[in-house]
Length: 378
Ligand SMILES: *Cc1c(COP(=O)(O)O)cnc(C)c1O
Image (tube, rainbow, N blue to C red; front, side, top):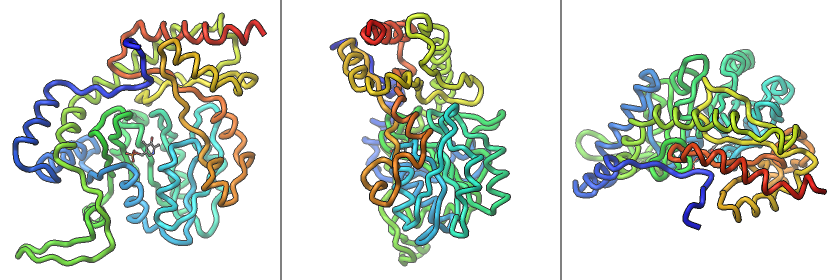
């Protein structure tokens, strides 16, 4: 269908496309001046803290854990209402993810439940700012300080989001952003880590590219078993064009989110749907996620199919990580995290992206009313 409305779509302007073409013509495609420029500009937004790019946020998460000294036998406290990358990165460094339940209102890690999950092996907390809604940074860092834990912020979805007037990444411990095409700004694929010191940035560079240290005379040494996760200048050129527009793109998302609240068909849909927290100062509105009525959770697949027939792409972000085979095999039971289980069963991501016209919000709301008519007849 021509006017199919996806749940998200990247927005690349012509100036950016021209800059990518310029890189292709330049003869230098891999990591080079465009990457260094993007790191410098991301660092400006991060209040001067060092920032390094990687080929994905997943790689950046893994390097962040290594830089924080997390390894075999350690435990990392995190949420299960996230993309599997969050937990997989913890396993990748040989540590164990310890899932703590969410606050069902914010859908974020419930910090009040964290102390009970801390053991002598706990090294770090790895929270996720799901949908770009920031977790309470004051409470987070108060807790981390009290228990002597490192913090790796999985802010993959939260570029440009703020906590009390300060942009995420401009304060705190280690912060990861993703530039996957579904995120608020993209490099095609890519991610970055904001760090505290030049030493941490140096370690990131080693983990990113084969652990190779180059001497001024052109010789090199290998000092740790790094991988291959550098970004290309082609990707960085996309990122530079996107970063210029980050505030504009996020402002447009905020307008559309407000429109969902204004247009929401409360009367037709009834009182049992749950809208996201109406935060128009901190959140970057990476996603607009509603919860189906608990009684209708099992209808979600049918609803997704019907919305698709009506030309609307909705999504499920995310199935609870602890219910997936790998984590089940490590001993996690679905009912270990009752709020996560409930929210994951009911959550639905509705279309929201900067190029979406205002009227598309009404179209989505009308489609929800149409698609759920049979529920009300029953
Ligand atoms: C997208 C995402 C990641 C992974 O990002 P990639 O760049 O695809 O590796 C990690 N965590 C969360 C919460 C994400 O949304």
